[in-house]
Amino acid sequence: MKAVVIEKPGKLRVASVDDPVPGPDEILIEVKAAGVCGTDVHIFEGAFTCTYPLIPGHEFAGEVIEVGSEVAGLSPGQRVAVDPNVPCGECFFCRRNQQHFCRNLKGYGVLDLPGGFAERVNVRAANAFSIGELSYEEGALIEPLGCVLHGIELIRIQPGDEVLIFGMGPIGLLLAQVCKLNGASLIVGVDRVRENLDLAGRIGLDGGFLSRPDVEATIREAYPLGFDVVIDATGVSGVVESLPGYTRDAGKILYFGVCPRHSPIRLDPFDVYRRELKIFGTFSLLANFDRAIRIVEAGRVDLETIISHRFALDEFERALMLKMGELPARKIIIEP
Ligand SMILES: [Zn+2]
Ligand SMILES: [Zn+2]
Picture (tube, rainbow, N blue to C red):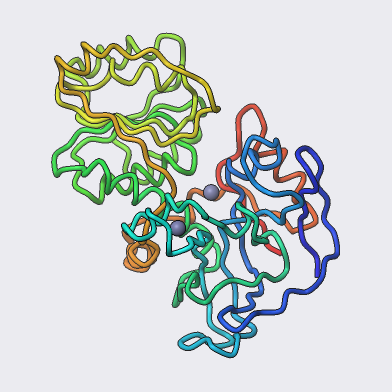
């Protein structure tokens, strides 16, 4: 079969590789849609700890074409989305139900296991979730939505909260929708791309600001009391450093975007003390794949609008370059 193979950092090809054969507890999936993520860029650039060569792709959905001898509850023809995380189940964190911190974590397309930028992929049946009538593209986006749900679960948005989000890319657009779903009364976004702000307006954003040098003064003037919740979805440490300036006393700050390693910011602990600021980190997702599928099935979150491009497997390199561009594309879907 054909698959994208990252041989080593900076070197990828679309190659012919051996067909996967499912083990007793695995299923074989024909991949129908797979999302390109910032993490794929990090894997390509060597800024992510994984074993090369690797078939990337950790946001994917497809059709079950074969099931292992011990698999019950899934059968060929079923449409599934895949939770890419494979925890060991035995370490300290797994036994505390914090599988995302598993000390022996593996992951399809991200940590050691072959992923979804391929015609077919093997996964443990336990990692596959039926998506019913959802489209395969929606199925591919359940993973990023699960990550967004995890972050929002951590900060506990309350009805009436006023929220400011930096970065209206695919993740920012999902965060905005989930904040609204949790009862936020005001959601304001900041982005470098006018089109993203327009799109955000169509799916429920109340206000948008273009990221310009004077953006801080402009937002402070418009919202002098600041926001209950301020979220970074840019992964730019300069932006992260500025977040307390927009946060209301007793407010919450969420670091969602992935900053480069070792990019320290200045934070005034007196400010955190005096204003009772609460700072949260969020990593990956945790046991919320099923919830993510349900809210999409119920029509509460729109996944299609975050997609900007679709490419065939052979065009993967072009897709990745587009993702790495100065003004990055929104969600790119690979259709093997
Ligand atoms: Zn991802
Ligand atoms: Zn573990």
